[in-house]
Length: 278
Image (cartoon, rainbow, N blue to C red):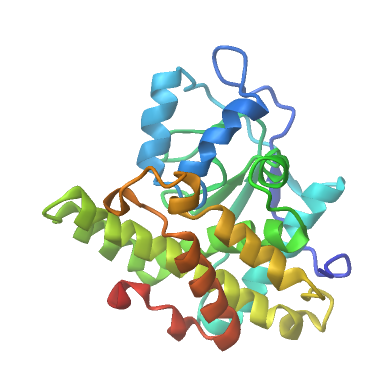
């Protein structure tokens, strides 16, 4: 994937190294393996509940805002900026989300205490994406999903949840969940939101080069990296075949690949109406 010449937005808040750890000595890579069941678009209410059980409810300081100097931080800035540039062409009055980089754990404004063990997440209360970049290592080494486009897919997916907040889709799905007659019925709306965010990631990928003058663009093998990542995080694959479909919250590997591909092939958010299809 080509990205180094892309535009920098400079709006990344970097809290790494600020010591906002979790009670009990922090979270290692082994424990990060549990994110397989919660990765991408985790419900912030779950973030708060689990954080409270683990005892990590400290206050995080505000980090420096700008473009991080390290390559990983720069990648987040360039890709996030490009994703926002695409959505600015798709939605009138689009407002970009905030971005926070952190290590182990950090506070949010309205979604409790976020932790690396839960993977990247979007908090609708403060309209901010939170990323612990140790997740890239987890993706590559534990989930078998490496490569720049796989990482970019994560960022685009989280911004997809921001788009759902702006359109009201997230709120409508949560209301439908609250009125669901069973857990299985309620989980269908969660799956719909996750697959729509996957589709939105595909929409971004299809339009990335056009809005950047080719400075951010997929290259040979990039789409395959994204499809591999989508497959690796399917509920059925992560569950090892031991989970009932009624418990799925993010979609099967086949579904996640299908909707990422739909977004990419169409390049149109209108092709991502999972709420009416599922």
